[in-house]
Length: 369
Image 1 (cartoon, rainbow, N blue to C red):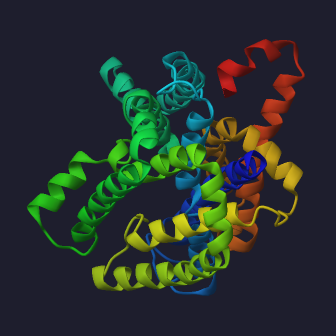
Image 2 (cartoon, rainbow, N blue to C red):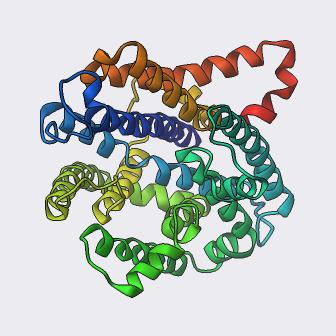
C-alpha cells in the first residue's frame, strides 16, 4: 500500500507539472498567437482543432493530481497516529508544517524578488498576504491549504475518523459538493447571490473546497484492510468509471464553453471530481499493476514537494524565453509541451540531486523540504 501511495504521489507531481504546462500551452495558442502567425492576439480560431483537444485531454488526464496529494497526505497523518492514542500528536503535525513552511517562504521570496526586478514590487503588507494565501505562484495556494488540513487533523479529522468514519466522509463530501455547486452559476453566467457569496468565501487556498479528499485519505489510513478488500471487490467498476468520467468531463466542459460564449479559465467541475475519485480508487485497487518507469516515478514521488515549489518559475521563464528566442515552437504543441514537461520535472530534480551531493546538502531541507 505504501509503495502504491508513493507511486500515486509521483504521478500527481508529474500531473501538476503537466497541468501548468498545458496552461502555458493555452497561452501560446490564444494569447501569443501573433508570435508565430499573422494574427492579432488574443486569437481563438485554434479552439477545437487537434492541438486544442490534445491539451484538453492532457489537462483532463491529470485532474486527479491535487486530490491525490491530499489523499496521500491524509493517509500518512493516519499512519503517523499511534494506535494507543486518540489523535495524532501535535509535534508530528508541527514537524510536517515546518517542513512545508520554510521552503515555501524561501521560494515565494525568490519569486517575488524576481518580479521586483521586473518592476512588480510588493509592499510589506502585500508580501505577508502573498505568503498567507499562496499568491507568489499559481500552484502555491496548495501550501496554505495543506497546512490548514494538518492543523485540523488532531482536533477534527483523526478523532472523527476513529469515532465514526462514515459520518466524516458523508459530511465532508456534502461540504465539498456544496462549494463546488456554488461555482456553477458563475461559470454559466448566472447571478445567484448565495452562490456568489459561497464562492467568494471559499477560494482555492481555503479547505472546504477540497476537504473530502483529505478526509478520505485519513479514513483509508485507519481502515486499511477493509479499504483494500473494498477496492479489490470493485476494482473493475472503478476502472470503467474512470474511463467513462474522463470522456464525459471533456464533453461537459466543452458544452459549458459553448454556453458561456467566451473563454473560461479552467475550473474544476463536478465530473472532474468524480473522475479524480475514480482514478485514485482504481489506481489503488490494482496494487499489482505495473507502472512504466516505476523506479523513476517513485523517486519523483519522494521529491514531489521540491518539484511542486520549483516547477512554476521554471515553466514561466522557459516559456518567456521561447516566446522571444524561438517563437515558432509555440505553434507546435507536440514540441512545446514535451519541452515544458521535461524541464518542469527535470530541472527541479537536477537541482535537488546536485544539492544533495554538494557541501550544502545539510541545507537541503530548507530549500526542498
